[in-house]
Length: 371
View 1 (cartoon, rainbow, N blue to C red):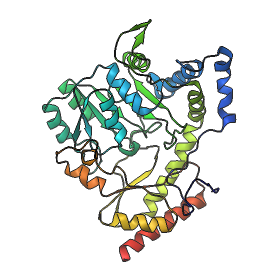
View 2 (view 1 turned 45 degrees about the horizontal axis):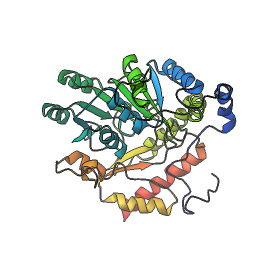
View 3 (view 1 turned 90 degrees about the horizontal axis):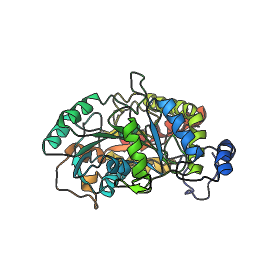
View 4 (view 1 turned 45 degrees about the vertical axis):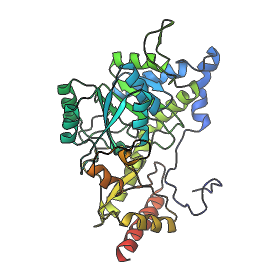
C-alpha cells in the first residue's frame, strides 16, 4: 500500500481500492476516435465496447454515462409511467432513477436470507398496481431470478434488474448474469470491480437496447424527437477505459474471489452471518450481517482503531430516508439496514494483505464479543 495524502492518516485498509486501467492500457483504444475526430454520440470506442460486451455476455449492450441515468433511460425508453416497485434496501441511486423518470417509487420489503425482493411482498405490491418492477441484486450477489420474472410476467409488467455491482458475476450454476428481465443495468463506477471512473452498461433484448439508445440521446431518431429522453451517453474516453477493463476483468474477479473466500473462512464467528447462496459475484465489497445489531457501532470503532475502513450499507433503508420517507412498515429492510456491515474487498490484494486484514477483523470481532 502507498500513502495517499487525500486519505485520513488512520486508514491502512481503505474501503475501496480501485484498480482502474492505467493510461498506457487504454490510450491506444482512442486512436480511431482521434482519427475520426469523434468523441461522443457513439463514436468508434463506444461502438467497439458495445460489440465486445455483447460478445462477452451474450446479449445486446449499450454503454451509458453511469448506471443511474442508464436506469432512468430504461424507464423512458419503455415509456413507464406510474408506480415502480423496488426494494427499500438498496442504494439511493435506484430510487433516484425512478424519480428522475417521472415515476413513483413504491417500496417493498426484502427476504431475510437473500436481502433481495421478498416474493410474497412483491406479489402483494403487484396486486396493488404497478407499471414496472426493479429487482436489485444486493451488493452484486448473483442468484437465479426466474421466480421474480414469473411474478412480473403474470402481472404483465416489465422487470428491470439493477445489477450495479454485478458485471462479470455468475450464478451458482455458472451462468453469466445479465439475462434476467427486459434488461439488466450495471455500474462502471470507480467503486465497482469493473472500475473506469464513471460509466454504465445496459444489457437487454435488441429492441429494448435500441430504445434505450434513443432515450439516452434525447429521444432522437432521424432528427425527430420520437419519445422521452435525456443525455445519458458515454464518451469515448470512458469507453476506452472500459475496453481495457474488460480485458482484465477476469483477473480482477479472481482476486476478489480469493479475498471473499478468506473472509468466509476466517470470519466463522457467532456474531456474523455470511451471504446465503451468493453465486459467484464480483465482490465489490464483502457484506456480512451482524446478528446483534447493537454490535455494529462498536465493531466499526474497533475496525477504525486498527486502520480498517468499513461501512454500513444500505442505511438508512430508503423508506426511512429524508427524501423518500414513507409510512409503510418494512421490518426486514429496517432490520438489515441496522445490521449489515460491508468489509473491504480488493482485486489486487496480496496474500499477506488478505491474511493481515482478515486477522485484524477477526481480532476486532473478538474485542466486541469480550467487551
